[in-house]
Image (cartoon, rainbow, N blue to C red):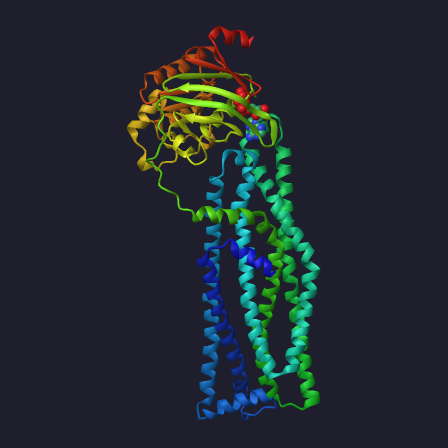
Length: 586
Ligand code: ATP
Ligand code: MG
């Protein structure tokens, strides 16, 4: 458990750790106030019954002697006021403590969420191509909440309630050693029994939640995004069954997580009352105690119990909660530690730096294979792309065209060989300065929910998007139908647009960036030949775009290129002329 606490602390920032520490001081104050009010109930009850302040208990006798020093006519009133004040104060402090606890835990949750989001945003394309986005969403959304609310908060509850119990039980030790010993042994054995009895079940329930949550997200995302197929293939029942299986599995685990820890609470009350009555019986029957004395002792133990039993229950609940949600922490632990390192590094302002491209891009003997599929990739590629040229890339599906573009774009790094821009070798450190020169329309273009305008001015605040540039991009991408209608909502993933319109929005977005190199990966495949030709002609006339790299299967498009590279099984060769392409494609 101690080891686990240190592991969790490693993921937090310093200010959160300090806050947590200070919070424990408030707890000590609450515990002391509770003890004082519990002790003062004894003289209060004795005075209430009209007896004199004396009792057959050395500790309370001392307290009474102390109280008697202030003896005056209004002693009863004064004790009442002090008793109530302590009690009220302890409750007020508890309220403040609970609020701060909850607030700071939410701050921690936000800290985790922001860090993880930034961490995954910083990951390269290869990482994302290997990982499920539902897994990421589940980590950012569910696992961070479980870590904050069901691991860290319980840790705090554990610490504070342990302190409260310790202080109150110490007070009971002062009053009566035997009673304190019996209570401690009984309660500890009781809770330990339940903890070990439930441990495995809670752990299993927690593991199930961690495992099932991404599938639960998957059933929603994939079911609704493939709704046309679902209707046509008549697979509604398949998706609804998959969804309800996951929901039920989550439900069962969550019931286990919430219900099991509650069981001991009801039983502990039975034990406490049996002990209390038994204790009273023994005192009256065998020790000949007076009613006022028993009342005073019962009042003290009653108030102690009122504080200690919930505290013990919270300690137990905390152990149970930590145990059943630890899998969420383990699932994100490494990412959180690495994310913290990233968030500490300040982003250097690089807005003005850019690699100059005036002559030539050279790919020298580039080889790249996918880590999980060593047969796929590109091998010993040599290419030259002069500034101002139009380069065509052609080849069978799966031959490596997009992979080649990903290398030029710096989404993946070559295993062997180098890419040189003029005289600069592109590497991990300068890649972002190279990318400033590049605009790209991918094969599977992603449109986000919003307006045409916001999709073209990608990632910019609405107020920063320049209308004249939007207008120009629309013209170049042959999106005349949206001129003066730039605020049209395109729907989720561009559902309200046609396939060709989506591609043209993609081209307009790339053109809005105003880069010198434009890379099109089958970006005009859904367009009719006339529109495609018009767009390419617009680009030729556009002075900003100097160099274009086009992946296409259309001879019409390739004919307009200055150079054509043919790619087969990841190997690239430059074609001498257009006739060679026709013969290759046969
Ligand atoms: P298409 O014309 O169908 O778009 P392409 O020529 O663009 O095909 P690539 O996407 O470059 O082909 O893929 C080349 C090979 O690399 C394929 O065999 C593909 O399965 C494999 N591949 C692509 N992406 C990955 C990845 N992230 N991990 C592993 N293998 C991959
Ligand atoms: Mg491709």
